[in-house]
Image (cartoon, rainbow, N blue to C red; front, side, top):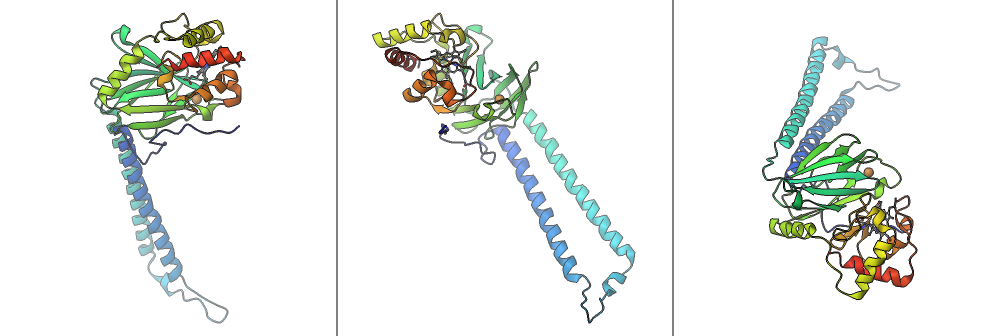
Length: 329
Ligand SMILES: [Cu+2]
């Protein structure tokens, strides 16, 4: 299989390039830990060199000069005491850094947060944007769009097996455990597309289970959300209309939903606004006609083990179906 990951424009899973408040706290903890450990490492190397340098030397002809060992034992115990104290102090500093980081992470202001329920499936992500007003809710898959500067509460659930969400540029890692819910709070402070990855082995396609997070300015987010709330647009031309019939008559609707049509399957990604996503197959392939055609014809060839059957369609039907899918903006 030739595998060309659909690389996002920025933020290729880089913990050291924080693009949000939570990742910045974790980055600070990392930098502090690295600085302290580097200092300890250098100190130990220097002490070792000094000890080797000053050690008594001998060869066949001369007896070792052990005079440096004849100092009072108290002095050696002193040094051991100091070194032990310094080690404990260093560990306490790390512990304090850890505690303060946890507190900082828990203190993200959450007023006016975007509320997203993210469900891990083998091997894709279902995202429900929740709202106190049920009519404003909508569902999408594999790509989140969030407003820059506004907090996001991601409620995590797993449908089948354990998964883990990790978008390193934005936040730490959190497990999705069947039967439990967890939450991850984050805020993007810089616009960009950040790649996340399932970080807990969840089966055959674990490595091909990515999630893109698009952080965009607030007005762009509102426009995107308003569009996602709308049902799929009515196909404008004959080819797309025929494509919709192909979709509804093939078995696609058993698994997939397209709002505004009779297709209401709920065990696979919602396709209502498929064309507004950059990738297909959980961040794996660019969302274009060629990859869609390959995916629909033989998804196993692109993502072995995937829970979607092959759909050998007559070429005309396939072209019409592709034309229809491209209208799902
Ligand atoms: Cu997974």
